[in-house]
Amino acid sequence: MLVSMIELLHEAQRDRFGVVAFNVIGLEHAEAIVAGATRERAPVILQISENAIKYHLGELEPVGLACAELARRAPGRVALHLDHATSFALCERAHAAGFTSVMFDASAMAFDDNIRETKRLAAWAHGAGIAIEGELGVVGGKDGIHSSVDGMTDPARAADYIAATGLDALAVAVGSEHGMRARTARLDLPRIDRIRANVAVPLVLHGASGVADALLVEAIAHGISKVNIATQLNQAYTRAVRASLASDPDVVDPRRYGAEGRDAMIAVVRDRCRLAGASGRDC
Ligand code: G3H
Ligand code: 13P
Ligand code: ZN
Image (cartoon, rainbow, N blue to C red):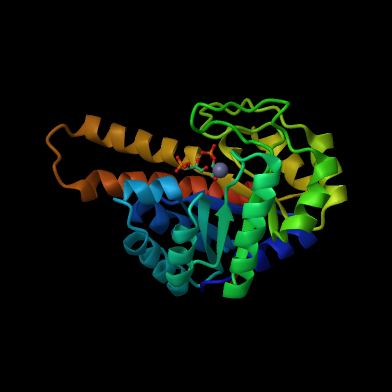
């Protein structure tokens, strides 16, 4: 069933587990995420980034409505979230298509501009009846920007930021970086503790693909409630498709190698939901 992301995050915050948000590229991704979560009886978040929508020729609705329908048909709880949006018009389109939350990414803006624009978007989101995630600090790995200590979320500013903007969930920069292929990120766990102590809303870890399993479990124990994973899913999909194509150079039917890619993603989804402690929470 299609549910609100914020309801899942409040449950995760209360019970100290992580809801995993997997990034959708094509329909095989969305099918694998819902199938894997269903087998685990885990609540899950399907998220589509602004860049993924650009890949779909700038059209949110074909991929977004398909994801909303997959969520509605799922036996367990599935939220549908717009990830890393910089465009207000895109947020409006997401809401119209049934998305239950958006992330407004103003992390590239100066602090005052970030507050002003995020506050405007939060007022709109709440009027529309959906939840909103924002980011304070800079999680690198996109557009040639790398994570740095200077870009980490300042725990002292976090409370003011939430109070000024009215956000429902906060993405924190604590040492992870988008797009890492090796799990070598060094998270600043004491910083997560300090942010957690200062703000009441659920905390989000972007770039979780680069975090080693034991460290991810610790991050959740220290107060992370939403775990964003894209690269691990894409690695599994691409590896399986590449192996399938290599094993049968005459293949032309995308369903042959697409199914192998999808199966590989299902395995990742199941494994990540188990690691985050989300398995077994749904019927
Ligand atoms: O942060 C989200 C995922 O890493 C996907 O990123 O679709 O913006 O490249 P992208
Ligand atoms: P990774 O691609 O590093 O897993 O990051 C995912 C993410 O943060 C999506 O918002
Ligand atoms: Zn991200």
